[in-house]
Length: 318
Image: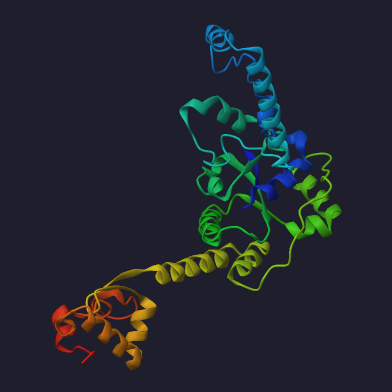
């Protein structure tokens, strides 16, 4: 077996916490901007020596000092904004799969013994867009996504779980973020064993593990913690389907106004609400008696559609 050993988490900071604990073994730079030449230095990878000369020859002493101060502040902020590092590589977001310009790197990954291969950061999106033959192990860090976009979490977790289900030969290990805080010694030994690395040392002042609310997002996290990827996928898929339904809207022919599934169901089942809509239609000069109900004619996902003619003939607003 060969391939990279992936550290993945929905929140990049959570991945950074683990990667910082095993810094000597990680493929990727903790603070990449620090290795970038200063603004007044020659950047050999981006410009010729002549271009560098033309860029800097007429810079005044005052401008030079301002650029140096700005460059220093940028690098300082680069470190402060991510206390546990960045660690991004060419694989982090797009995943690892064959590309001609990465041939040599990929051959190296394939040929390097599994116990000496890369430990690399990858997002959920990166994993779900990867060729599984290039991945040896996945360390999935699970933490409730406080303050993050729920839809994005559900979509990415759905895709990740589908990838894991379809590629169940890939070795997957779960690290519950709460255990890093409360059972750090156990987690340390676990990481050293499954990754085949030496000393793993977590930094101080780790982000706290806040209590999780009892909701559908926590249900997904619980499934991930127990490696129940099938149920996690189903929960994400179902929840996204419901949220997508709730966001659907269209124009009601009888009111000439925008409506939703919730409003249409209320219209069908509540006479008082229907009377309000009638008044709105009359005030807007809409000939509602000769207009079909689009909810009846196909917008109702759970019902069988009827024709426009039938809807007008059996107008339930009458």
